[in-house]
Amino acid sequence: MGDPRVLPVRGHEFAPGISFVITDSGGLTLSDTIVRPEGDDARLVRDALAVLSTGSTSRVGRLLAPLGIRFIAVPLADGVASTIDDPIAPPDGLSAALAAQLDVGVIQSPPTIEAFVNRSWIPPAAFLTGGAADASRNAGAGSLLLADFDGITAVELSADGGEEFVDAVMVQGPQMLSVPSEGVLHLGVPFDRQWRVTLDGETLSPRAGFGQTVAFDIPRGGEITVAYDTPMTSYVIKGMIALAWFGVLLAATRPERRVRQRNRAAEAPMMAFTPSTGDPFEPEAVDS
Image (tube, rainbow, N blue to C red):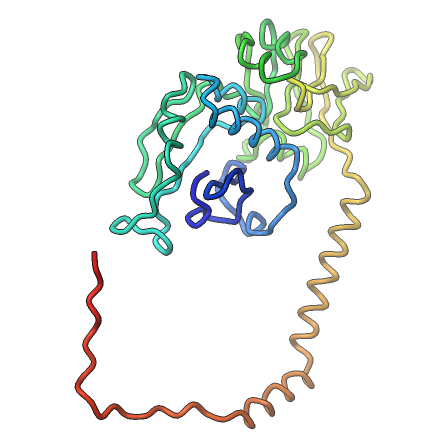
């Protein structure tokens, strides 16, 4: 988050001159360049930034923890709008406010960004027991700030595919998971009833974890299956987008269109360059 002119993609505006972008692990992809409407995750981040801006907490990392936000970057230079030699100043007070948080630490980073780590981070998929399981049943910023985060174990894929557990379920389909005991399966995504878990053939219903994310109360240890039922509307929207792109490509590659464009180009006047008759050009001095 920082000045929108140096963010890698278009972000969500928090205040004039300050925007933020939420990305998954693995860096930015082409899909991140598509402007999306603000979702529940962005609204939760916005609420946390509002608390940070007022200075009313010293543990803003806890407010970001349920969404699995581990790192925060404030870009300083992108090599285009802002450079190392001539940088755009970051939003006044932003880095200082982050560094002052008790659960956010400054980490070593290249000179183009200022990087911070969230020490209160909850993995995007985690099994909660003890105080953390109890805390997930409460809602609100006040509860998060006072919660006991003991008893958090990251959930990882059994196969070495490099994907996050949540991403694997969304892309590859249902995933098996062994849980050791009674507890809470936490998924760091905004609450969505399309998620489902089965334990020994019994379907468990999701609830809102920490008042905002997906959580399943697991009554006992055993093998569970985690799945996501993609809504039909999602397929319809993807189909419409694909058809729209197909129409654009078809229109751009029609032979008669190319002929007309060539005809117009042939009829258009050519730009004429007038040779200089004065003194040789000297570059204008630029104040540093």
